[in-house]
Amino acid sequence: MKISWNNIRFYLGTILYIIGFAQIVPVITSIVLGESLIFILLLVSTMLTTIFIAYIIKRNSRYSEVNILEAFTIMVLAFLIPGFTCAIPILAYNVNFIDALFEGVSAITTTGLSALPPHALTPGVHFLRAYYQWLGGFSIAMLVLLFLATPGSAAYSIYMAHLGRFKVTPLSVSTVKAFLKIYVILTLIFAFIYLASGLSFFDSIINALTTISTGGFSTISTFKQNAMYAGLILMFISAQPLAIYYFLYKGEFKRIVRDPQLLLFTTVLLTTFLISLPTLHTGLIEYLFQLTSALSTTGYSALNNSTLPDSNKYILSILMIIGAGFGSTGGGLKQLRLYIILKSIIHSIQRTTIPSKAVSYIRVGDKTLSESDILWAYTLFSLYIIVLSISVFIFLLHGYSFPDSLFETSSALATTGLSVGLSSHTLQFIPKVVLIIDMFLGRIEIIPLLIVSSHIIKKLFKL
Image (cartoon, rainbow, N blue to C red; front, side, top):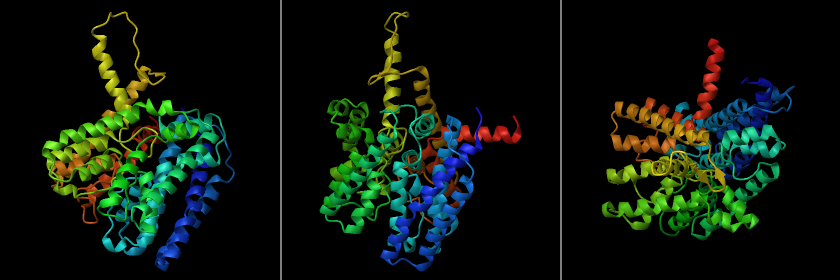
């Protein structure tokens, strides 16, 4: 399979146009909030530079169908470039480049881990991070589909590259538009609910943007009282596939009730809550909030994670890796893949009790899974474990405890944002780079980067 750089240029230019013009919103907001002149100028210069580069790249390129390798390349760039465009304005507040890049990657990957010193967390920076998480939640790839892709294999390839091998509805521009409408409407509803819970207008906007995107860059360090109850419910809603709300919009209630991911998410959440009760030394609602935050990969906190017993840290780490529903804005392995793995294990056990010539299938809803579907889930699971193990090992080499290392790296790889306090501007350089890589790998789900990297290496060395 070959890569056509004409196709890459066309879509990369499109992505850069979107990133560039999208920065008009934080520019205007920063002016209203009275941010520093240097911060605003860096925002404007980043915006204009991005648009200019988009013009240069896209000039003389033309629309064409893309294959899956090209789509993977486009998707990797779609999440890499915004990490830098978000980082550059933050440099205005005497933040070193690696910390600013950490913040930019954390924002666009909807993670929520932070390496900024307190003095850099101005209202404008808060909004910039939240806004990038909101964009990252719906994803640059989906925005490309909305604005420039027409129905056909090119749009389908990028959609598949971002959302994976299981699409819940036939792809069309009208479907993507419906998803975006749902995303915007839910954001507005969330903002109203937070406002009704007693938060200020600014805090309500920030938390609405970072809840629907399961991003976690909140202006609140610890959720309490009404805001905690609101956040608990809204995190649960955000962790479910957007398709559920599309079905709700279409009035297809039976599909919602029978959705395996919704049922599995609820089961996993309640089961881990009940298992944790004997060792629990904190409030029940606060801990349920924390479990929901971990499983939804939102990253909000209602308590101090560093004070939790190691057993509770392990549970939260496992939930973060499992992650939210497939087709939601959440990270992790996703509920659908857990469901496939569990069903395949049960199927393998059942096969031992039926005749060898009998035909049996593994089904998810109305879809019969092929061996490649099941292999894909196991492959991604294996890669997650490998990357997680290497990351934990590097943290251990730098003197951090195993429970804290596992927790922090799980949070980064699952793009969650919960922390035991390791992620900060004081974190050592190499562990900080590890978390940046983990956040990026977690958002693009490892395999696309491996495929693109292997292709580039083969071309460079003519293997």
